[in-house]
Image: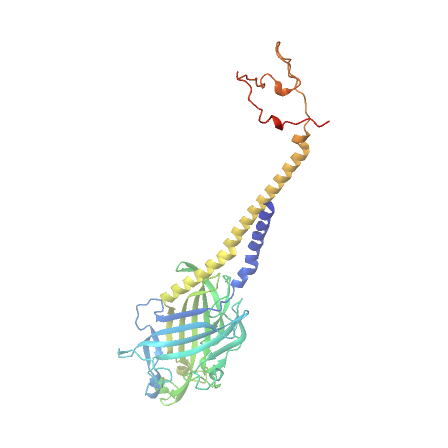
Length: 448
C-alpha cells in the first residue's frame, strides 16, 4: 500500500509540474478556429449614439457636377476575420474581409436618402451604398501573434472569372504590428499596431485600465500619422481611384490671391486616425475598439510658391468615429472570459490540486513506511515469541493425585477404573440366556 501511494503521489506531482511547463504553452497560441466578427457604426465624437448623421463623406457624384459636395451620413463598418491556409502548428494566416456601408445620407438641403448596394457582379454607380471594400491577409506567429512575413497582402478588387487573387492584390511589406489580436500576457507598455488604411505601423501607447462587461482590459491609443493615400499603389501599381483629383479652383470652392476660377487644382486624398483598442491582457483578445477616422483632400504642394489659399485648403472625404456595437463587445468579452477561465484552470488551479494531492499521498506513504519499520524494530528487540509445541510433541506428565479413600479399590493400574468413571455391574436377576445354538461356533481345540 505505501508503494502504491508513493507511485500515485509522485505521478500527481509530475503532472502538476508538467501542466504549466508543457501543456499551458501549447494552449497559449493563436487558435486555428479563430473567427472574429466586428460591427462598428459611426457615433458622435464624444461616443454618444443619438446623432443619426454623425459622419461626413464626399459626394462621389459631384465630380460630374459644377461644385464639390459632401454629405452628412451614418456609416457601418463590418469586418470578419477567419483562419485560412497556409496555417499549421507554427503560423496562422488570418483573412479579414472589411466593408464600409452607407446606411443613410442627408444633403445640404436636409433631404435624407438610404442608398442600396448593388449585388455582386453588377455595375456600381456613384450612388451605391458600398463605400469601400477590401480583403486583408496576414500570417502571424502562433505564439507571439506578430506578423512573420509569409503572407501579407491586401486585395482591393474582386477576382475576375479565371483570374488569380494575386492579380488584384498588393503586397504589404514590413508589417510588424498587431492588428486583429495582441499576443498573450500583454503588459502596460507601448506596442506596434498596424493601420490598414494607411498601410503603416503606429505606436499603441498604454492609456489606462478599463473594465468592460466584467473583464479587465488595457486601453491603448495609437495616433496614425498623416499619409498621402495616392502614394499607396493599387494592384496595377497606380494610385487608387479617388486618391488624386484635378478640378478647377471654382469646383473646389477655392478663391483668393493668386488663384483664378478655372485654374486646375490637384488635390490628393490624405488620411490620419486615432485608434483605440481595449485588450484583455492574459489572452490578448481585443474586447472593444474605436476609430477616429479622418480622410481629406489636401494639396500635395505645400511650398511657398503655391498660393496660401490652396496650401491651407481641406475638404473632408470621410470623417467619423467608428465604435464597436455593444453586441460585439459582449461576444468578445465572453470569448476572452472563456479563454481566461481555461488558462487559469489548467495553468493554476489544476496544478495546485494535483500538487496538494501528490504531497498528501507521499506523506501518507512515508508515514505508513516508517511506522512499519518501527513495528519491525520493536519485534526484533523483544526477541522471538514463545510458541506452543505441536500436540504430538508435548511431554506426557503424570498428574499426582491423593490416594483413594479407605475401603475403595485402587485405580492406579487402570484410569478407567476410577471411582467416578466406573460403571457398576448390574444383575438383572434373570437366568443366563440359552446359547446352545451358537455354541458350536466356538473355537474347537486342534486335533491331537
